[in-house]
Image (tube, rainbow, N blue to C red; front, side):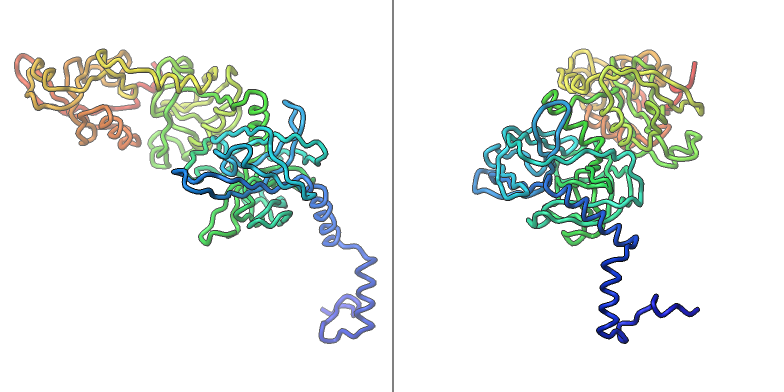
Length: 471
């Protein structure tokens, strides 16, 4: 197909007059690419004054010398407190004295924060600044951003302030990232191919409306630099953490009181008659918890939580912890090949810490909730009293709790010696053995029993899921 001469120009045939004509056309004619370029320039112009460079002087562990940590941040406001605040990553400013943090503003001023709020579980930090003649960016809604939407990443990579890169949202809902030494509980990252490099941490991810939809946090790299995969904390999460820190000083988190199966996969899902490994399977329900009061049971798979389809156990943890404490939530669970709905009232996560820190009354035994048993480590004196060899080791069964799937197979005075062929001589051994067999529906238990002056070993098959069937 032939094209008109005025539509096609070859560089080798370009003379001075033709070049001049093209320059005039470029300066007067608009195009979608030019319009897009102009839009990006406007976004950068309106947002760049709110982006800051952060430099922290941290003392090296052991007290010998100091090291510098650099990152980025963005100036924002909150409905929970007056004034201006810099939002950045917790790992940028963590454990740095306030007077050792320097914030370089767009116009060249260098200031220090008045106060620092941190939340390691989301990797968000908020720095209160006393300066008022600054420009604040605006929050956007990360939940309205789809894969393929164009974004700008802003910050100070390698110390190069006021850098802007362009890319798209390449994925959403990224979890299970290993981010240094700190365990980040709330993970729901936006993934982008906009270039993010060391020093970009804490800088904003901007949509085409010039609003902050994420806080740049990490990169996946094999070279130490940008390999085209970066991760940003979504604005819905970052804004909530900021508001909670300013209102309460900490971020209150809800819990339901369960231990979830981290190894729930398609094989286990198929055994439960599910066609995919969606949802979060319950491995343990803690006593006197919201979950136990709501009737959640061992082996249940939580499919939906408060209207959100649960993708995996990390997703459920995120949904629960960010829900208001005291709120009544409806959950859809899979039990005995059927869906059912439960209602649960969320409690404060700090209650879980108090429970875990409470002293164990060893004389009364220790509950093993998945099995429905109360056990006590067997020592030489107890072994002799029960008619066993003094060198016998295992866990003495003090009680088989009502509703346990082992009721009728185990009884008081039995000694649990092995779980799934793994010897158990302590509570730590038992915990590890249960974890190793968490994916199995049935587990072999080795029991030592003394009856009528006769001691014998026997094997018991523990069917975990019987208790999950409706009565």
